[in-house]
Amino acid sequence: MRYYEREDELENELNRGALWAITYGDMMSYLMIFFMILFAFYSSKNIAAQFSMKGLEETFGKDTAIVSTLFSKNGIQQIAQVEISANKISINFSDPILFEEGSDQLKPTSYPHLHRLTAVFKDLPNPIQIEGHTDNRPLGRNLRFRSNWELSSARAFSVLQFFIKEGVAPEKLSAVGYGEFKPIKSNDTPEGRSGNRRIEINIIRHEI
Image (cartoon, rainbow, N blue to C red; front, side):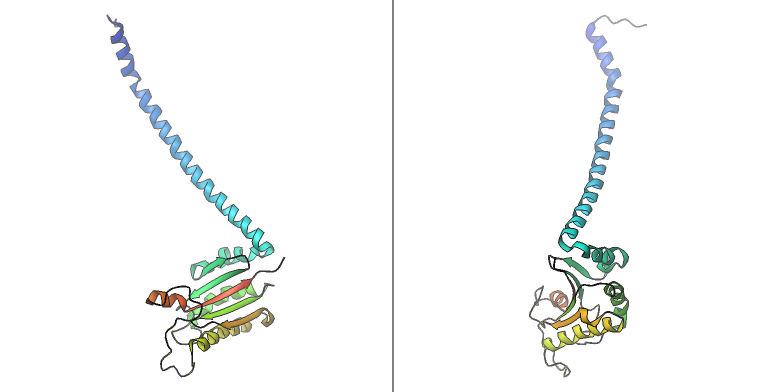
C-alpha cells in the first residue's frame, strides 16, 4: 500500500484515476443527446403528418379519402403536381406528359397515368373540371387550331373523352380551355413555357 506524504499528491492521484469516469460520462451524455434528437425528428414527422391529415379533414371533410387514395395507392404525385386548396384538389400534368407539342391527341404513354385517375373518379361524387393551358407562342403553320385558346380547349376535351370512355359519369365532368391567359410561370424561358403547357384536373370540393 502506497502512502502519500502530501495531501495534494493524494488529490492529484485520485483525479487521474477519475478521468476515465469523466470521459465515460461525457460519451453517455452525447449518446443520450443523439438519441433524443433522433426521437424528436421522428416524432415531429409523425406530428406533421397527423396535423396535415387533420387539416385535410377540416377542409375537405369526407373528401379526404380522395387525397389518401391518390397519394398512397396510385402514386399520382410521382408523375403530377398535386395541390390542395380550400375549394379543390388540383392535379397538374405539365408538358409533355399527356400531349406532343401542338397536338390535342393523347400520347399512348399517357394512358397509364390517366387510368390511375379513372379508378378514383369512377366512385367519386365530386364534380371534376379539366382545364387546358398553353404558353404564349403562336401556333405557326398549325392550320387545325387558329389559336392557343382552341388548342387548350381541344386538349381538355380529349382528356374528358378519355374519362368518359373509361366509365366516369359524364355529368360529373366539364372541360374548359384558358389558352395562354393563366400562366403559372414566365413565358420568357423554355422551362417556363413547358410549365405553362399543362392540363389541370380539379376535384371540386363539396359544399358543407
